[in-house]
Length: 422
Image (cartoon, rainbow, N blue to C red; front, side, top):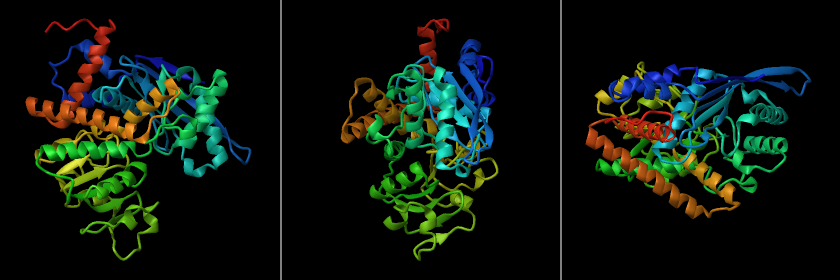
């Protein structure tokens, strides 16, 4: 059974992040209360009939953090370590991300505490449909719009779309994004997050007198985002010297070849003569490179290893890869952090395009998707850079301030907050 809680659960991690970045006098208590609490928290269980006939039950969550600027937007992940605190924190970051790039969405996130590697394809389909049966009353094109996340993909989205449409009695492609192209997906969605990251990185590098051409890059994570950004950076002239996943990290200080970077998995190429295998995949984070790209999971750089990071820039392609306690160590040493809510926003921007296309029964050409993605994310990057320079703040602080002000402006315009007196 669903347990629904509205405006009662303070997000401790969100509060901590805001407290670390925003000055106490910048916002009123009422404004902070809006930022500290998700609008709606749903906790539920999903029963799954295994192929053996046994029934197992999995804990699941969906958090709509804020919808002042539009319907909620955020992925659904399947991972054994998913918990409510993580989902709340990620929904908060989605709220800020959508506001920062100025698209008309609020923030949401969902997750199921399950290891999908232990499920057959039929079991995965039954689980996906079961999740949507529980969430159906709280999901919709103008309510809350899920998308793929860790261990979910366009096939999972297709099953969820079908289940939603069956229950609704009408085909509703706009209820979910990240779908297959044949079911209302968008061209350019697969590489959107990585391509957006390349645009942001280029913008920041050029602002500081650097260039993509010839820079050394290490990338942690070789899933959709990590593998695509590796290939894109390589094609733009960057020297990708290291790539890694949870089990293996490959290194060549002269730069990895097309053969390695185009592999479907690192296990396929780990024994080729051109690469060195690092003793510990985590050592990739401390290589002496120009740009470090965490593109795996959260909290990879903590106070335990922050002092060992030797990159000049960190491009956060994963969500929340640097802990709050680690960030001061990096900033003190002059390492420029390009925050996740800007760096990896390409995915949600193209999800917005997909949602627009579904609303008008249209398919945009690939070049239009890429052109409009570059326009939106480059404008956001320039806004952040300008604010950072004008206010003497880090890019993360500037990003948060811009996003928070936009969310609070929407709350005030809707009558949820008193007008500011200053």
